[in-house]
Length: 116
Image (cartoon, rainbow, N blue to C red; front, side):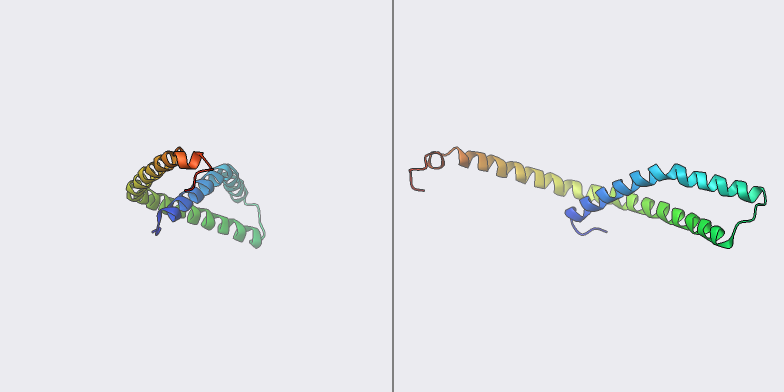
């Protein structure tokens, strides 16, 4: 669970980056699975190191998929939680912007010879 809205936004952005990268690499990973299946189906001997690396790839891919699902679920829950906070911050920022605009057009700020 993220503590604040800033952490939430950072987590969401990181999740989006990782998801895009994973989707880009997924066809290559699937190609490796197909290649390994061909080797196995044709009883071609592989060094144990290669088999171990492929098994690790399978584990890491499954772990990454699970982690992405968990983060997506948590992000969706946090989105609902932070929508209200974001809306409040937007309203506050809009009010501050209006106040700043009103202040900068005041005569005392436009006429530098007058003392404030």
